[in-house]
Length: 526
Ligand code: CA
Image (cartoon, rainbow, N blue to C red; front, side, top):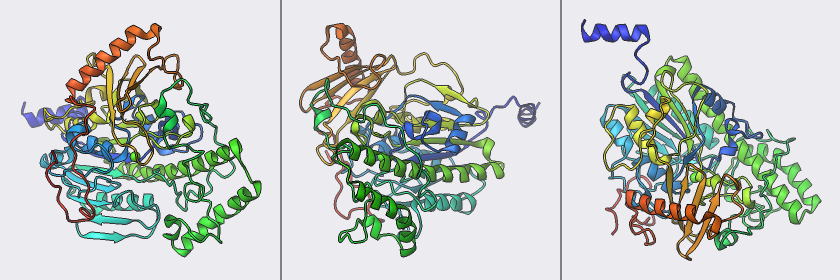
């Protein structure tokens, strides 16, 4: 029998799984600051995410996808390179991505993929390894955002999430070589701060009360100084005029995002917020009542932003189905990190505590991933590049530090999968005053954190203390666990080559006006 005849026979008989087929399409949906508790499939009772829930129903949901550094740019640099930030040169948001280095899109492009990135980028240098790109400069704007492309910068009227959806659909339909497989980075700005909902979602949570987390009024007892000294609380850090959208007609200094809207957009916006803002003014709230009000406003805005992402994910999923490409397309949904939805009284991210260490990961891959399954391995955004390369049949470079999740996606048990995850956060002090820290989180539910600029330690037993409100570091009951965690942490620092972890890492510094359309990355600074 010829090879072709065998292939036809196997295909027709269904014995050839999708994994054996060559080069599936990869649709990589990545949002910004999307907490697990902002996804229905992860158990949120408030979130409205029918399309993400559909994805989970058709695919695999990962309970423990952990980031290596819970902040936008560094997380994206890790996803692209499969390396920790001390090696890819992007440890904090004042860095500049060396776009001459190896990334997975470059390797996929070389292997015959059509590649594209649309949306949030936040790496300062121009995207490389993409046939097509249209990215937001810096954080971007929710209304009438600017986009940077190969041809320069242009402003587009409309709501950012929908524009990213439009641009992605346009590239899928007519912007690429249809004879080649595609890898689309469908990377949303939402639900990043300032959480401005789109016109279609305004008011969708109007008559709803969002449940409060247990630790909304945390007193930070039994933890070390960083938990008390940071600056990301709903009470003190979240601003009423901008974050909470309390803009009144007589205000002299209205927020920039508000002034950016067209007259007609502002009219729709004011029709929703105006009466609620007047009611707030009359209520004259203070203390816990004010915090509660801010929490409700924050969550409704945040979840509305997510609903628009979900709606746009639905558009692409429907299109894949309609065009018969569903069976040969891997769809991945994730975010650059998690976020605090009022837990510990906070918003924002950065910490190695559970809510920002975890990020959603849902993967649909017909014929490979069994529908409606869950995985509890400690996987990481460090593994994304390796997984995409493996799925495409491309050799994984030996200097990438993660591991392909393809065996896990196939439902296989992998006995030597990582049992502990290493984390390292750098950015300090601005803007949120979270002390730099590194640490280890094990699959057995223990976490050791070292705040190395002040030599303070925390140890959490997540089995007994899932909310992380009591550090047991130094407790006699945990002496042997503490010692074991310290050994594991040091081993992982050696494994990942973070050998001088308390020293400032190598990075390429952002220079004013260095990017925006033309600049090439300079060689990594010493
Ligand atoms: Ca982010």
